[in-house]
Structure formats: C-alpha cells, structure tokens
Length: 298
Image 1 (cartoon, one colour):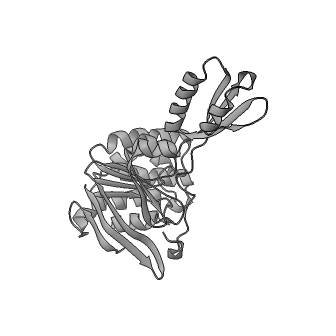
Image 2 (cartoon, helix red, strand yellow; image 1 turned 30 degrees about the horizontal axis):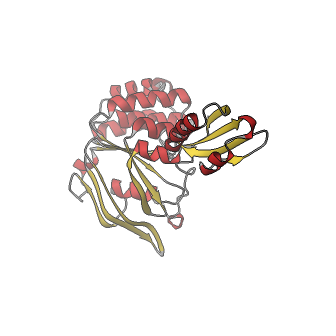
Image 3 (cartoon, helix red, strand yellow; image 1 turned 90 degrees about the horizontal axis):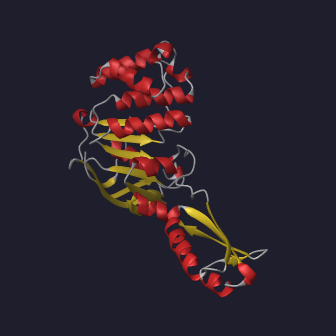
C-alpha cells in the first residue's frame, strides 16, 4: 500500500500538532517513525489509520477515503493494549470472524512468539501480563493479510528472545507489505526499516535512508595517548580535548569516527601510544510513552 502525506496539518486548539508534513512511502516501503515526546508521532499514526481528520491530504493507494475494504488491508498494533474484559479466546474469535482469518493461523503466529493460546484461552485479556497482551495483538496482526502494518512500539513489553522472534516474523510475514514502525529502539530501526521519518515539534526534521540517519546520531568516544607529549596541535585541529597522563579525547558520529581513525593512523604513525574507540550509547530515538492528552501535541 502506498502512503502519501501532502501538507499534513493538525491543530488542537492553539496547539499545532503537525505543521505541514510531506512524505511518500512506496508500496512495500519499510519506514521508522521516530521523534521526541510530543513531536506528533501518535497524531500522524491516527491520521494514517483514519481515526483523526486533518488539513492537507493523507492518501492510501491514492485515495483519501476510508472504507471497510481499505480497513481490512491495515493491521495495527498499539503501544498500550486495550483493557478488554472478554477472554482471550473470545477476543481472538471475534477478530478472526470480522477479518475472515483462521484461528489456527493466529495460534501458530502466537506459538512462534512463545505464546500458548491454549493456556490463556479463558483468561480475561485485561488480566494478561504486558508481554502476553502484546504477543496476542501481534499474532492477530501477523495472521492477517494486511497490505499496511502500523506498529506502535511493538516490543515495549517483550523480552530479548521474544523481540528476536518478532524480528524474524516481521521479516517473513510482512514481505511485500508496507510497514510503519514507531520505535525508539536502535536495533529495531537498524534491522527492520530502510527509511526513517523524524518528527520534531510537529515538523518533518528528517526523511531519508536509515543508515544515513544512524550515522548522524550514533556517537563514539575516541581516546588517544601520545608518546612524549607530541601531536597536540594536530589533535586540537581534529577537535580533541586534552586530559591527564597524555590522553586526548573527543566524541564523534559513526561517519566521523571512521575518518578520524584513518587520519590518526596516517598522520600520527610512530607517535601514538594508545588508541581507544568506545561506542557510546546512541542518542535516544524517542522518549518513553507519551501522554494521551492532545495538549501534549501528539
């Protein structure tokens, strides 16, 4: 499914949640949606799903209309699971009947995520653990024949093993479909998407290749120790700051790191006592869960 945003704007009273967003996700595109708290991510997701109106146009396969046929081609997994009093079995039966899915397919998808539906069939959905709720919703989504998957922090309640299982399923079950993944986890962005939409204060701050974006935000610390106190002028030119015991250091993006290490190896040959490169924790792609109030500019 092709997803196009043309001058998307959304206002809640005096608050501008989205300020003229333009983007195009081709059929089969895999896009990460990131940004700090109150940047407009959730508002944009609701507009894509047809749950909120907006100024401008949000087109799905060239159409701004939302009908049952189009809804059947969309699979959505929210960050926060609904508080359903119905049993897990009842939830699965209701959704599979509405969407024309086979219960066995849902059960199989759940098993591949480490969830035994037979063991929780009679439990109230709202009483499940956070991880079990998330796996149930993911199994229902992955069993669908959706053309567009919209996943909002899908691994928030999953352990490491379950996240790896989900990555594997997403790679296979969503082939050919369009994927919009809202996430602040670096490994998800790096593994699952090829382009990134970055929102800041309702504006489009970046829309482009994943690797180029990660190059700009992933920081490393480079530390060098010079022999006999030499090389200070060159290190200062390269942005290093002096420390103690002859050590100099600076932080660098991933792209800068490669160039700096190459230059240090070439220009400082014979004068380097030690060279250490430590990959620091990347800048956060997203803040934690956003509040639900429109005043928070979602």
